[in-house]
Length: 252
Image 1 (cartoon, rainbow, N blue to C red):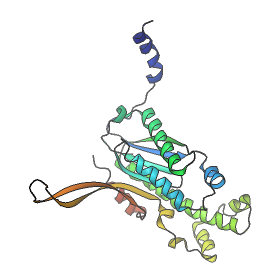
Image 2: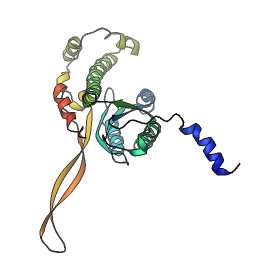
Image 3: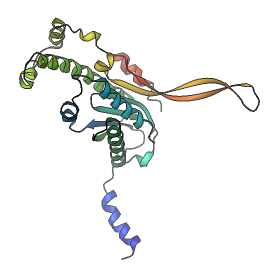
């Protein structure tokens, strides 16, 4: 059999079930670390419940994903996850899900591992969101998940530091209200509202265009040049204000 015939015969098994995101649909990719609890608590023993070095590695991974060939309008990270809002009109890889998932997971895993100095692996899944409101809801969901996780983590690790076992510390807060968890922390010297916002709200990243003053070396006249840079935002707004904040990245 000639190679071209063999290639055509076998290629169909790779591509027959390709799923492509339709035009007019927003694409949000979410990456999650695989077995990161073991990685951060056993292999590297990062500070609990939050560690600035780990945060910076995640932010570095996010920054790479936003500038490695994908047109990403907004990126967000909390804990061991990253969410990316791709440009509404992107046609990269013909919008094939398997390509988006595999390449983003590979890029994230490679860069995270280099920054950490040890192996770290991510998976990736794509959400196809048919409206701008659903995109805002998606990021609001992850944003509020960060707040919930931060409160639970601070309560859990405070109990652990008081000598309770992992099982007992986890069981202590089952069914406990948000107000009572805040009160528990406050009684032991921690005002949850005073904790760094990146712990409670996650971290955002987006592109900004600035004007730089200069001069034309040929004419000697004053000139202006646009510079595009990535802003990392550790002080994201909350609740409805955060939804309005996301709107600026939804331009079609």
